[in-house]
View 1 (tube, chains in turn red, orange):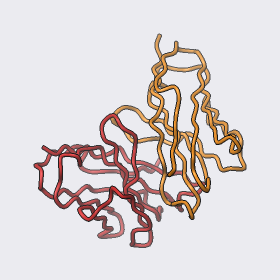
View 2 (cartoon, rainbow over the protein chains, first blue to last red):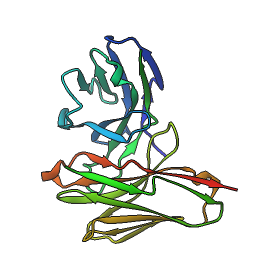
View 3 (cartoon, rainbow over the protein chains, first blue to last red):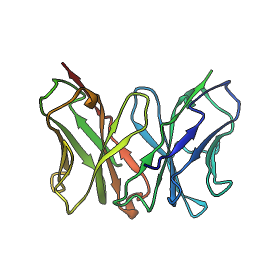
Length: 115
Length: 115
């Protein structure tokens, strides 16, 4: 079964450093998402991306975050200057069509630790 | 603000027994409700999706119900297995006018199945 793949699986970075998390969505999917889950808390929406632009973002997704689809297969999340509170599991997800009624497939996550 | 509440927070059952997990939501306008299974440290895996016109959906030993009038859903697991031990998360999405491209996650019910 096709799956969403994410790299790295775990990254430790120093506060203030830039981090790029990478995702390869399922190949025929058109909608891409980033979610995050702080340890012990619920999964939270960050951003959705369609047709090479952000379609929706949450209040968490401030100016230090950006997303990009640099080629036909990768989807990246960049955090410009990491803070301690950015430590979380970041999930990439994709869907064939929009959220309404369509299965959203999640990757296994990238665990980011900011020290 | 869209909210999803789940109960119980945690549950321990014996292998082979059935259980029912509850979800209450406040989403406007409602689009669909999903149940996901999340193993510790892994990405969420979709179990069921229901739109407002559906009141029950099955996937193997999992049966979800939806009452759109009372804004409640349940997930029933029959003949539980040790591998069912995981967090079960109720997830809701709103229609386009309510932020249609994002999922709102509950905090999950942590299920443990014991011998």
